[in-house]
Length: 478
Ligand SMILES: Nc1nc2c(ncn2[C@@H]2O[C@H](COP(=O)(O)OP(=O)(O)OP(=O)(O)O)[C@@H](O)[C@H]2O)c(=O)[nH]1
Ligand SMILES: [Mg+2]
Image (cartoon, rainbow, N blue to C red; front, side, top):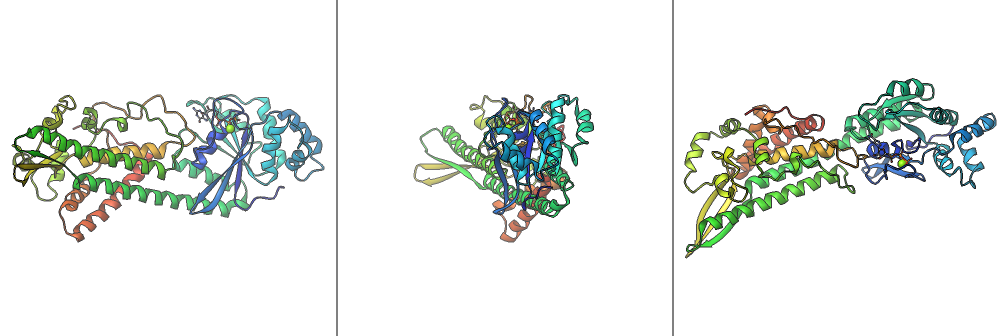
């Protein structure tokens, strides 16, 4: 039996072009792994350590596919009786051979004590060469697991693979390298524990570290999200004009200034999420019709995200304000309806929201002959809820985007049937009130109340993130 490495090391091995590098990339959350539709992309071993808190807790090794499995097996069978570490003996015996370069590379990782993750494509039948490869791995004797990954969504041959692989492997697991979620990855690590008891404690430590790391990452996202919400309700865009100039133009500029900053902050938030979830190199392409690609103020965004008018009225009651009252009180120039304000800019498309305001406007005299217009989020605005929905949709996309997937799915992630599809409208009203309370207190509240409402918001968002990492919201009718 080969001696195991101290930190669990797993060599991902198999047939060329089977999806080995893809599985590794998703498992290790590392988008530097080279994946390609052409066989032979991986020609030498490359290690990908998983580091948490500066400490290596696991390592995966990407390997080239078998090139000459039949000849390799014959050699193994001939030397089976005499060699304790067959993989090492093969590597030493073929070190000068160009022909067996791939075998020497992949068996080298096994000779050094790595466990084996054998990747098979469940969308094609088992062939005789596959059996040969599996037998080589059985003879090498390293702890091993077969992972059935399918390049197609409807894998036809999973049962056949399972029935064959069970003769050669300590454990078999189905894993979709393009769609695996965080819990699928943890599930696979859990099953790796069973392939060799000696690694069980180290793998258990790795799993605990993974879980803790995920919680920490979510806390960072919540911090960034709360900062975005806070900026949305406290930021103001302004512009000055001479009393002799056109006031309408000045309002438009102030509003533009306000939304430019909100868009910038939203972009910053997205980059933070991408970084936290380790989407570093590969700039994945979000489907064009996904809601997160829509402009913040597009007709589609305003129709499908945020709260309905009834729900806004519901949260409006939080601080004792009356929804109907605020609509009237702000009419007539002190509060701008978004439809009127930027209708010209975006094609007057906001009729649906004509009785709902996103922003409010204040006019002040700053010096003789000069006035200033200040635009900020309305006290009962849908805007922070829309931003929150967009942020949660983006979070869901980033956390569910398997690192091994290099192209976007053909279909969009958004199903539109006229109903609201964001998270906030499907929440129970208590959650929305927690948000609204924060939005109001952060603008004008005592430090103690602000901190208290921030704590409630953070706690509520913790639950919301857990939910949206695993499921989409149910569409809501208005
Ligand atoms: N749809 C889909 N395609 C996959 C999946 N896994 C791998 N592929 C595709 O299969 C092709 C080969 O994937 P790789 O991960 O590079 O395969 P490999 O086994 O490392 O290949 P070599 O390094 O050449 O031996 C790539 O085009 C991948 O995008 C999957 O789960 N679903
Ligand atoms: Mg590869």
